[in-house]
Structures are given as structure tokens and as C-alpha cells.
Length: 119
Image (tube, rainbow, N blue to C red; front, side, top):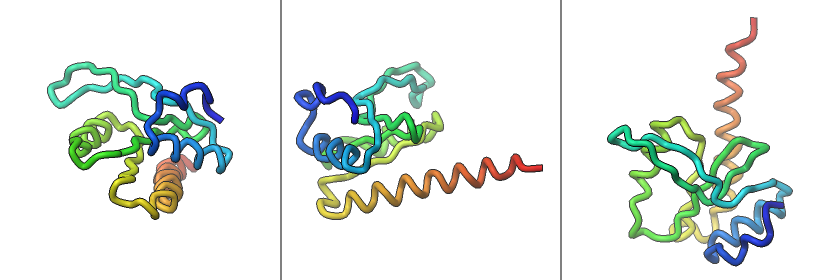
């Protein structure tokens, strides 16, 4: 799952998420670049920690309370990029459950949109 050689470039918390995704048999790409428009409408290239291509979801592993994740989250939301923020420093034991629940909720939301297409 994913690219094993990138493990050396990962922080410990990212490795734990990568291992968990592998355990779930979910393919991932590490730090796949995406284009966003920031709050001043400037184009930017950001690299969320994981992209799950089969699910069309990004994951950002939040390792520090000193980083402004709220700003990043607002930019992803503005650009309609499906992303899950895992605050491992807050939820040391519950992050796996949170990730599974968040993936499920995201797909339920997608299903509600798709189901509107029925005739």
C-alpha cells in the first residue's frame, strides 16, 4: 500500500497513519500535490499528508497544536477538497475510530448528492 520508500520522509505520527491505512488495505499516496486558491485568491500548491485515490479523500495528520490547522481547513473547504484532519496530539487513542467514522460520513454525504440524480 502506498509507496514504502517514502516512510523515511514521514514523521512518526504519519507512519502510524500509513500503517493503519495499510492494515485496512486502503491504498495511499504520500504528499500528493494539489492546487488551491488561498484566502486572497492566489494559486498555491499544497501537499496534504495522504491522498486515498480509491476514495477520493485527503488526510492531514496534525501533529502540533502550534500550527494553524483552522486556516488550512478553511482553504480546503473553500476549494471543496474532501479532507480529514486527524489531530493525533489530541486524540491519541481515538484517531483510528475518528478516521473510519469521518470516511464513512464523507461518503454518506456524497451519496446524498448522487442520489439526487435519480429520475
